[in-house]
Image (cartoon, rainbow, N blue to C red; front, side, top):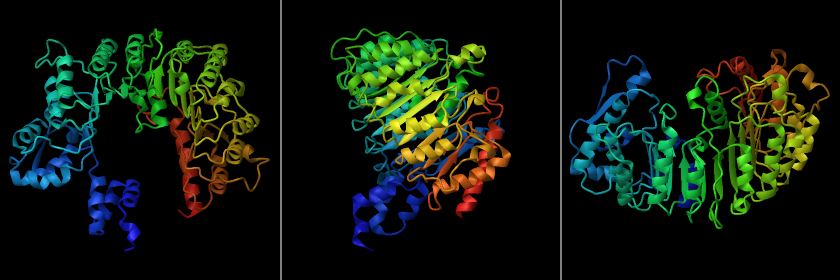
Length: 563
């Protein structure tokens, strides 16, 4: 073996890009690789059963009343077949010291029978707490994501894994009633957390599965966020429930000297653009109780507010957003990542004014995302909807952001831009890595772009790695098209969203994309909206047909490229 393949830094870089199964395979290659591979295998743990099975044999007792596989898997009683011994813990230490992030219970998807979920590991946790010879179960743990707290007594479980080295904690908003059994006041709960883990700098209120079904969700979230800020004035990053940044919270956060990032739970890196669109539209379709109540945002900021802030996610009307970023006491010039979300009826002049304010006040932006999903879209007349369409002139304000790398525009209306406008945009935009131009509009009849737009982006934005847009594909689209189009050099993902593709144009589109992607370029083709079966069928009746057509096109490309 060449000596270069024993350099730890190089091996860490290589193993990071491998899947967990591949990391397990390379761990069996040689002794020089085994320790580094194991570090990556156990760095993030999403199923406690994997770890507890190593500690001691376990028994998994299912609930016979469940008649589906997923319910049977989720509603089990997990307990040790015997009490872990000192020898078990000595063997387990070789694995436990490698764990850096623990997520529990990441597999839980049901919104019912919370008591079954919380009690599933109760006996196993009790044995771990009583038999451990060392104070810390996972001495190398840095981040803990406890995504479900359905019962007050469950709050004591995750404290079992906290210690002074943990710097990141994620929990849901708690909805305990004061008269509930084992009531655990949130203030006391925070005191217990930060007395055990005093070095937490990243705090996250992750999305609660039951969020929105509680009548006092907004008030409860605001109270708990306030208490967290009071307990941890040294916070560097705060993740909030969706649309939970109120005026009171903003004024309190403005005083934190180390706060660098404010974001919402739907901005998690695990979430894709499809998931973000699906969440927005699902709120406006079959689940009216999930529609966020966007309260007026008008914080009274003092000089030196948000002194360290560089990343901001916010839900408000565009009028309130413009007032905030143009506030002399708000550090707009130092923001590098900005996500703005609005559920209000925003006409084109309001969007245009917002973009101009962003371009004027935020010159350091590298990532900019705006999501405008109107709750009135299904009730408005055609004349009213015409006021929401965005044109190429609407985007003038953000064309001055020369450091921009990722630009994402989510809008329920398709952009009213032509192929000629795309050439203008491609020339004016900075060297973007990712571009999203409303690929999932509800009004698919308003899509005007054709395959010619792809050629313009390939020529004028050669550094583009991800492109998401909606186009029309028919045989007429391929007229006057070069037989040898400029290929995408580094393109990794093309998301055509709700783009329509005619059956007789599938083969022609496959040939066109194969030429643009190159034989050796594994270009990923995406289409269709995730979650159509869950409340979005009324908005997207053609969703399955669109996805089926692009799937056939994708298969054609893979066959042609010999993949």
